[in-house]
Image 1 (cartoon, rainbow, N blue to C red):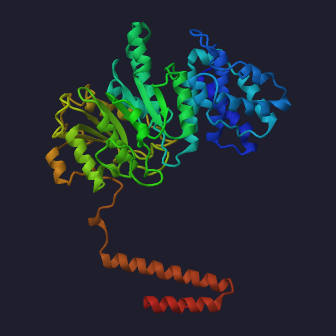
Image 2 (image 1 turned 180 degrees about the horizontal axis):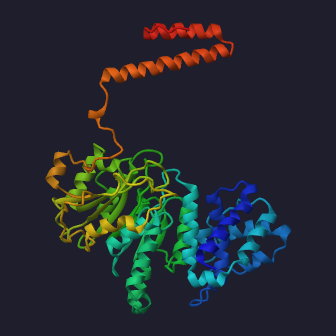
Image 3 (image 1 turned 60 degrees about the vertical axis):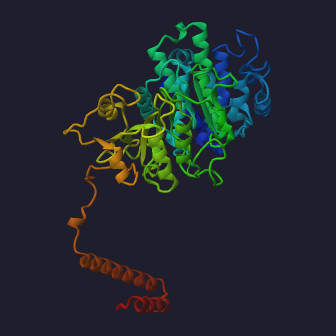
Length: 507
């Protein structure tokens, strides 16, 4: 049985919860509790084999949950959730912190446990439990769409960004808006594919596990999913100082994240919850715009001499005035903003959201904090592209030309050139951008779906056409009111409209 088959079976179990009025997101969270207990049993990690310490306390494990009779199981399960929130390993406590069950019927819980037990866990472990869980998160993202400024980054885009940024052993990699951990997981897989991680000496392996991957997530349920995701990909989430921390990066909590050599992130869209700017005290520019605030935090905390970043940001960051322009100027002074990728619409789970990826790097000389951006290369993958979504899927092939144009240097230092036959790839000098009032909303390809003003009829003809449509609409409304027996009201309204517009409306 393939991972895809197991994911489909697990996802179909959400039908069991429909009668309890459970949402998809609630279902995945509930499933996380149960899968954590089941997977710990399957992988024999209920106790730390190295230290002998209990990761999941005896009496509160999968076997114990199965042992209860059907009538008592739901009540005991709810007690189990509370207990695990304060006992066991760090990962156990973090996953079950403030955990509550949305299940209301004992029979529902019994059905879930029985069906989970039936799955082919041998094949699941062989193919990778992390991939299984990633599949569930993707299913949840597809169904959940967006909410409260949360957007889920397509995995193909994450993998392309990571490939271009080329994570290295020795990097400290951070996502200050980690979500379910997609960027960190992809970076880990890239490093694992290109290095012999298990063959590292003890000191290097210790550093890889405990001083490589960092992040922070503000939403409790999302943080729970992220911790589970990292654990299933064999990252050291039991370490108190590594992994994805729970907190607000834009507050003083965010200062615990160490300065990084590589930042990969898709910050939340919108304004800061409750209004106002970031409350952390180590920034120069403050704004309630979340994306601008995250951008400032990222380049401010990015280390020189190899520090590089790739950030997904909406269009308003490129052209917003006031503090937005100040932050863009500061970014281009302190960093080399070498590439902007204009992404297609429809790839996030809110139609019409226009986004970009900003690629930038810090200079090797930490004292050089002005004039670091000389040229900005822009690739337009948006204009005259399909509307991506469930019917038209975004694939690696859509990025192949951009990857070739980007070159093989993560800091954008590869020799680039503009091709006459490739209208999507263009270079803008810093002087040209200054002439545009430091706007980075750089587009040049004619949109084939747009209407040329030169082809429009004369204004008086357009106005006459609009007046005719308005008159006809009023006639139809007048007839409707008469048909409904409101003739007197129709006459009064017609006279009022006629007086206001100076029109002769014939009954």
